[in-house]
Length: 393
Ligand SMILES: CC(C)(COP(=O)(O)OP(=O)(O)OC[C@H]1O[C@@H](n2cnc3c(N)ncnc32)[C@H](O)[C@@H]1OP(=O)(O)O)[C@@H](O)C(=O)NCCC(=O)NCCS
Image (cartoon, rainbow, N blue to C red):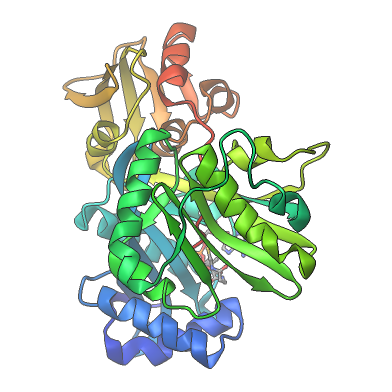
């Protein structure tokens, strides 16, 4: 491994970061580069952009975006890891692994209880405790089928208005209300300054309702819906049918949806779904904080002793009493060695469980041992969900 130093990036590093980014992800237009600079510049003094340097040469980068992720209707502080790049000539020598270890520590220093990322490749992240947890689901529907969703029993007359950057704060409140009410698992809410930037994009059409919103754009002769959230039938019908009014020009609409998105049950025909998924991974950064912040179904109770291995973050490792009662959870550290009956997790399998992956899956991949069928059932009842995101980062 070359002699390297990891440090926080500053504005003077951004040209080199952009060069690394192009070598990793392909060309970027001058306009997108400008938006990118605007988005990342405020994160620099917060220590959210890390660089690996070989002398003065930038060899690798990773960014931690400030997100709130909703888990069973409660907000959890999440570090969204993006722009992981290693210069082509430095790949395959352990630089990426070293950088990601620093990212885990940085997430903890920034107060994030969990971290999520969209992996271009799994092994580097899995080896450090991130595990496959959920997906961004993209459904393709005929525009005409959406246009005709207006009306129906719940009506289609929810009030909509155009929204712009000045609505960023209100949009965040709407999302928080809807995600709490729907007990959402997985979707994120960005900070206000990032929203303001997205809402200023002139190619996007943005509409806000009391309990929902849509952001969509043309994609060739079709329509792409980046975000659509609706807290009621009336709002779902109003927003989807608004998008569908493009049907005289657009044939189909590609949209980021929930796995159980109401639109899939509102559509008149659904003989086969065209839904693709882009998977994301989750890592628990601070076990007690993550367990405490998350929501749980109110009728479920768990009282289990578990043992967790976390070579990267010893603060998570050891024996814990995991309790869930009346919709809230806690993890209390226990001294001494684990009792023989304790369920044994790696930090990766703990992260997967947190995100709703069933205990039976973890057990049959060698990631969960000990415990009992009763404990597995109780843990499943507390954590099980189909986690999703509508935002890619
Ligand atoms: C993916 C990337 C960040 C890995 O960085 P790196 O410095 O080459 O990785 P390391 O040498 O530290 O290897 C870490 C682990 O990842 C594995 N790995 C590295 N590149 C890989 C690839 N392209 N495909 C599959 N596994 C890979 C290594 O085998 C190693 O696994 P091990 O610990 O089991 O031996 C780097 O190759 C890169 O920048 N690629 C282009 C951009 C990209 O894909 N970024 C990731 C976006 S999520």
